[in-house]
Image: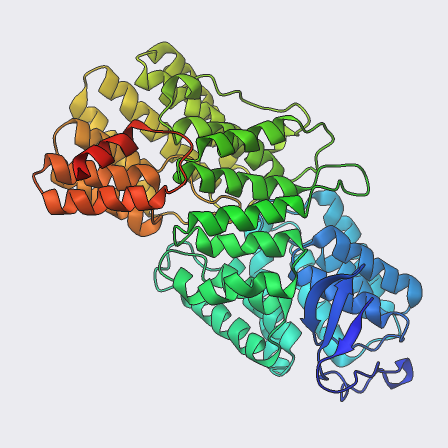
Length: 544
């Protein structure tokens, strides 16, 4: 492993000086994984010189959320130094995924606690390192409290470490991560996110190539109102780790928030290509499929439908086994639904397969099974097949109940409730119950406005507010329709159908200037469209 000092030569702290933290804060070193750059970290420990390179690689990969490789590095450190307490801590830390859509499994809670037990009795340690161990113990100690309770304990633990060692940049970053993970969904001041972002920015100023600083700045500002704060950092994350799939992908959490589709597609293609190799156990990596989902979304917003279908074909060509991770399940559920719904191909939407492919443990993911069921319900309703729509809505109702029971910090039950309300609205609309349809669609839009995007998704497969705008447009409420489309664009800039809807609502409402503005934006948004959607033709005709 490469270990190049950035400023002064980094000296490994000897084990017999284990209770003195005077050497804990030293200069950062650049690390790599089999020649692939990972960035720079400042992570001096009490362990032997033989263990130190493994620890530095492990901590860098941990900040990249490349958890499996990180665990391997930390376990290699325990083999190099069986008394290395912080190595056992690191291996246990890789079980905890504060921002991911999965939740820790019971077996991982057991093995993680066993690792922490070893960390507690290992001889090569220090007060600073024991603080790290105690912070993680707080999470595992709350094993029966559900993921929200565990994450609250995680925050409390890292708050203590950060306050005790404010100059410890690695601890500061884990504190920032905990702040983002526990940010209240309804807090529109974004207090946690702003605090976390400021901490990560401070670390980035100290160590410009730090992977955690880049990564957590992006996550802290991954919302429509804050995304601009992270754009420069996001665009340079690949300089830190140009071959790390998750680092390449993370850039697009911000570019997608800004509606920068070409950049988003480019980075996610690179991210997918960097993760095509199967895991050591032969499984398809979640990093690969996660990038493909974001890639398909970016293509669809530019009307690059041929490219989006190529992504689906790439996914279809894959054989099991697949890594058992929510990101894999989400990609398989979402991409076929997106391709039909984002093109308003209602007949295809009604035929989207549920629980595809068979190699995914779908029983763990009722909230994700709901995505193709929603596509089926909406597609059938739009075509007047109300029996099929009602059947899918009944399935969604069962899935919502199951989603509400999940031990996950994110409220997936509400997402399924929004899908149910939207599908019910279009059934009512198709049955000429316009008043009920509009009210149900309004309720769905309001529910959606009070949610936040989960990091697993580039965006919901079809926004409720966009569907509400469509219904208002069809019923002649052009001013109200415009308000809804603009609200979608504030949350998801440059979405294809909301740009068209805003232009069409303005056109029908007699505002020629606004119509021209949004039609031109739509055309600018799709310079390389591979499908001549009728909306593009209409925009060109309207502009003359």
